[in-house]
Length: 338
Figure 1 (cartoon, helix red, strand yellow):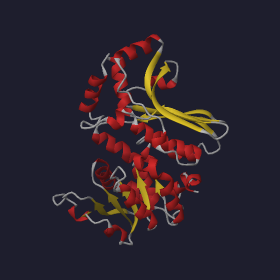
Figure 2 (cartoon, helix red, strand yellow; figure 1 turned 60 degrees about the horizontal axis):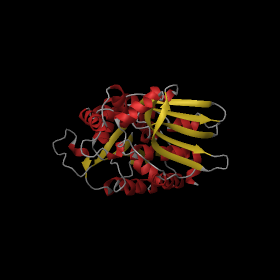
Figure 3 (tube, one colour; figure 1 turned 60 degrees about the vertical axis):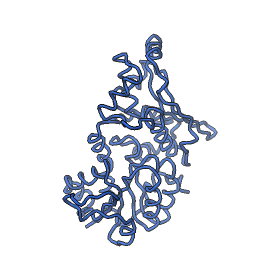
Figure 4 (cartoon, one colour; figure 1 turned 90 degrees about the vertical axis):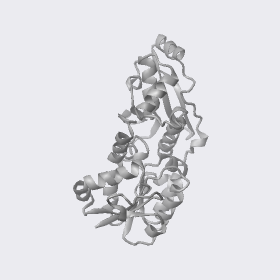
């Protein structure tokens, strides 16, 4: 039996646990053995939870238990997540995460640790939610030299821009609707509307393409706060729509340029028809040409949780089934780890 620990029990952490309980048979079949959650680390009080015996507050309990081979990080941010994940990898435990901020900032270091200690650092869900893009880019497009990546990687802002176009709404009204529907944070939506979420995602994808860490703080980023109804109308007259585009381009000399900014997208372009909460990423390779990855990128909290888990649960099964860990998505960015 494979025993795992979950770090954090918020929206994503509780979703991981729910999926592992509800789909236990399927996950176990893919892993080749039963998968059981032994610990859930969270400082809050869960004494009334039906599985209260699983909850712990001391991270060292996980490190000191030789039965724990796989850890799922769902804390978010970097203050606690980064040192916990680092310690897990240094102890030879594989880690699965959807934490885009941590991957974008410390991905190279953590992959290096995974490679050094013979375990895996897996982060498919950090970009695209339930829409696979990281593994296909690494495996299916491995024979291609990728020269460009561009697309819509934040479902919240895409929903808002769609509302502004279709219903002639201003920024504030579109944001209010997004918040009411659970697409945008009610307290502080700045990560989405100011482009920081998209910046972290394109930093991860750029790092995959280039083979070295591209840091979010080095990517010029501009969100959609300044977009007005007058801008939307002007774009329409030009036969375009406004989309928040995250992009990167690699020069023939190996140079890399990347950015996040609102762009005029001609209606004939396939990204122009990507509306509402959907994401689309266009990858250009020298042999295959253009490949598009498309799927939902935002949703109400419960929906979002399930979208993330569609990527996290299969990854857990893969990790639990590893008999001799190959640091493989410590292989996904093998060049970065060097």
